[in-house]
Length: 323
Ligand code: AVJ
Image (cartoon, rainbow, N blue to C red; front, side, top):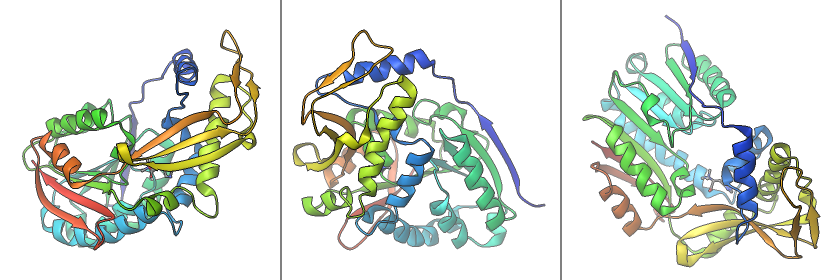
């Protein structure tokens, strides 16, 4: 007995030239942008974890509260399954579920965290194996957006896709991904999907403009990550954090706004990057979901809603879907 932990790395080396080309072409688009995948180096992941504890960032707090109820209602169906968490990050959400199951059931469960960061998987496997000494853990370092096929297909699954991470995709990509996920699920599988909801603008804007300015530090850190990859010399201090709700697209947008005219050195490009004062770099979209969007999303797959969990104000929802 005792925990068994194994981790398999399926990440395909992105050619660094390819990565540099991608960043350079995004910087030269109109409007200029930087992909939000570059937020999450070690420091960025640390800052994001800090964001999840901020008073203004209601998302994580509400979702964790909902998961207490979710755990009670799904528990009877959670014997002899693989719990597959997509974008597992830290393991605090899964431990809410596991805590609510009784020890005898828990022994029959295997936890399969899927994340692009192998070190994050190691760290959370370590914590979980101490918390739940009988839990089997089969970590998978992979990009779940493109590598769903590497997930083991031996037992029924409970997929977990928390944190409204789906909201980082454009609506088209979100539909595409959701259809794909529905297709890899087998009869008897289910999915817990956490989604942030459309709500009054000032609440959304406060969640992305916290008074401690952790979100600002998180946003600016993307420039350090970019500097590392493409050898540029962005000075994060010469940019302003900008986050606002775009009502037309149901999304919070984050940008970095140049405080002054500047020329950024681009050793791998034909020419350096010249920014005007107040010019913006678009770093993130965080889509918010209304009833209609959720209906459309669910209809794009062959999954059925088994239960719907929300706080009283419908600020955040966890949806239990079954194939
Ligand atoms: C992890 C993508 C869900 O969009 O709310 C937090 C990232 N950005 N604060 C979100 C984030 C700014 C977060 N997601």
